[in-house]
Picture 1 (cartoon, rainbow, N blue to C red):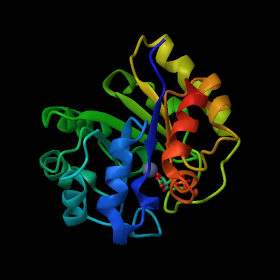
Picture 2 (picture 1 turned 90 degrees about the vertical axis):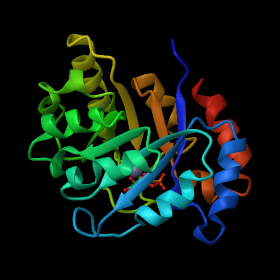
Picture 3 (picture 1 turned 135 degrees about the horizontal axis):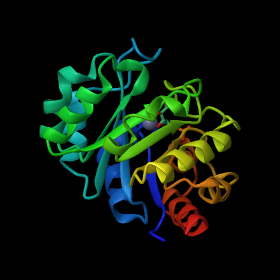
Picture 4 (picture 1 turned 135 degrees about the vertical axis):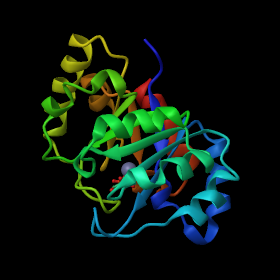
Length: 219
Ligand code: DX5
Ligand code: ZN
């Protein structure tokens, strides 16, 4: 069984001390950087864009997982590749031609991710699952950090796991939103491979210890 991954969400970092927080993650037991890009249209919030991402990836020494919460993501696929993205996740709800979008992400040498909002059914991935490296199940409605976890996520993990196994896909399952030490173990037991944690990590007194403890909890 491969090890389970932890991806701190930079959205919850201190933006006035971004380099310090990036270095903290570099030195921690965390596996990935999770980076949330919000456009104020697809979600009711704006996070940051390319210049800030460029400043972040100048310092990151780990896998960069970019989560696009934007309309028309196809317009920026090449740019995100150039900025050092390893996995590019687009929202199912934002893609009219998802299959084409996934091919374009692969063509730029990145891994493919698809995020599903809490209301979006797993069955909709039936015909694309073999082209998806990572499915990001939103366990909150996207747009903000620090929201509470939606319990229905557990049932979606089982449905997704069933689909991945039935189609013999190698897709990873990522959970994004409201992850804490209270649900991390149960999420992994249900079938998750990657846990994103934002406010739980960055609002804690000692983020390095919090990451270490979460990582021990899930492996
Ligand atoms: C929400 C973002 C999440 C967010 C998670 O729209 O996609 O990645 O940063 O934050 P927490 O862990 O605080 O729920
Ligand atoms: Zn995210």
